[in-house]
Amino acid sequence: MLDLKMYINGQWRDSSNQEKRPIVNPANSDVIAYAAEGTIADAREAIDAAKAAFESGVWSELPAVERASYLLKIADKIEENQEELTRLETMDNGKTLREAGFDVGDAAACFRYYAGLITKPDGHTYHVADPMQAMVVREPVGVCGLIVPWNYPLLMSVWKIAPALAAGNTIVFKPSEVTPVTPTKLFEIFEEVGLPKGVANMVMGAGPIVGNEIAASSHVDMVSFTGGTKTGKHIMRTAADNMKKISLELGGKSPNIIFADADFETAVDYALFGIYAGAGQVCSSGSRILVEETIYNQFVKRFVERASQIKVGPGDDHHSEMGPLVSQQHMEKVLKYIEIGKEEGARLVCGGNRITKDGLDQGFFVEPTVFVDVKPDMRIVQEEIFGPVVVIQTFKDEQEAVKLANDTDYGLAGGVFTVDGAKALRVIKKIRAGITWINSYHPTYNEAPWGGYKQSGIGRSLGTFGLEEFQEIKQININLQVEPIGWFEK
Ligand code: NDP
Image 1 (cartoon, protein in one colour):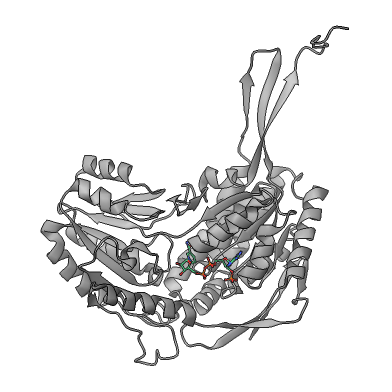
Image 2 (tube, helix red, strand yellow):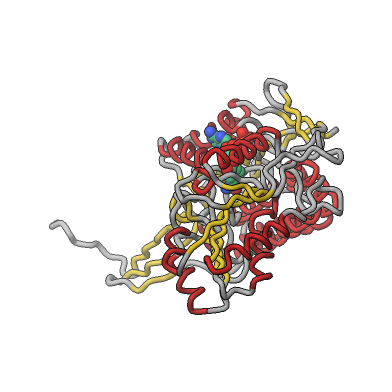
């Protein structure tokens, strides 16, 4: 049984009220850990530690190359512990070992990417009108509050922590209350590589308590959040009180458009991957498949045939292709959406049930589910379900495809399948979303910015854009002719 403590000012700590929360394996409901249940007082202590560390300059004033060397050591340690981190991620989140293994590899690569980026030249100089040299430099924002969800417990942590530390900030990090295991291991690595105390702090506990304190505190200069749009709006409102910088990566209801001329089996295959990877608990999931009407019936038939063959089971069983949902509460939410779909009059053509046979009755498994005959205004078409539930819509032509694709409040991701290159680009350019693929779905790269339009968020993770989120921009004007300006008469 793991005993997970918070990491504040270089010390492993229980909660100030000694409370603990059981952490459950979603494949079988076994309690795998007890995690410290942080309080507002704990959050404040972590914030104070981060503020003191920032102001001391112990990290922000370290030469970039030295900060980079810490990040490189962290990447090495993640790789050394790849097997354990993968196993723990599967145990805590439920995802398959294959999925978790990719996340751990990506986490190490992300630290390396930002270690490289921070040592590259940046800044600008300008020739301005006066005898003046103007230059622009980038500086850390200060204390960054980082709040992450449960769908990629390790990787989402790293997408925020790596650029925040690279830029010279100090951090107060909060994992999701349901998945604190691999984030705790990550902080053990921070301790091992000797990150100066107070630079990286972790508090656990409920979002509305500890997370809210991070968003509200006037000692936190920026809050970077990934999670649901509703929580994102709450954080934005809370952060507005002291005008802190925000970065929000929120939900989606992303369209995956399949034209009749697409390579059929490739389109079916990616469409399956687009929705059922991570059991649909991925912000960019292709949860609305739009298919050109001439191949609609053929597509639905083949898609359902393949979806019903997906092997659902515990993530640590090498035969499993899709794991459970993260928690009982989340499974109930997804099952409720399936009922809503039926009540709204959509036709269920695949799945739709919790899986309890073959020893899965203690886990939170849901069948790959497909709805057809949907209308654009149905809740299952408009709202993020965040589970293995897809709606397949049909369209007549390019114009209608674009209209339907853009017809939600979200704008995170989108895909187009066609062999007509010009059509693909025409359509993608009209999709109001920040992350898009042509003849592909889901691949993510450290080099490329990740984030959404509309209610899918503000700002970008990853790439140079992801680093800039954690930097302030300063202009410095140097007078090259040091003499009085003479504006007022003597
Ligand atoms: P939330 O968005 O509520 O949680 C994400 C993180 O925010 C967690 O660390 C959570 O803490 C924290 N949090 C919750 N409330 C607050 C608050 N008031 N102030 C500050 N932090 C807070 O996700 P849920 O688990 O509730 O999921 C709800 C829905 O959100 C899902 O069904 C899905 O649709 C969407 N979602 C989208 C994700 C994405 O990647 N875009 C990821 C996760 C969810 P804690 O959990 O510890 O309470």
